[in-house]
Length: 133
Image (tube, rainbow, N blue to C red; front, side):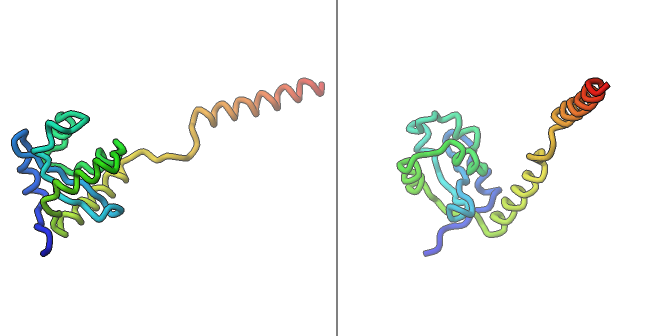
């Protein structure tokens, strides 16, 4: 039997302490899945607050950044209620690309380092001409 599919709006409706769902997963882990973590709130080692902060939302980045153990990932499997609709998987992917394009570029030259380098070159040239005279 195919897993039940939910929209982002349906998941967003599960955002209270008595009814909390999260979306966790990415292309490397088989795609975004929907989990009902309501019964796990009190057991969560990091406290219920972190789960409530992400209630009804895509929480994969938070989940992966924490570096959850294999046991945590096994526990998560027991809380699975379904997956996102293909349309909403696509919507999440495009939002992720959009957010990535808003991030500052890593790389390039540091302007301060360029100025320091130029000053050092000019000073070196000046001192070498002074020394030759």
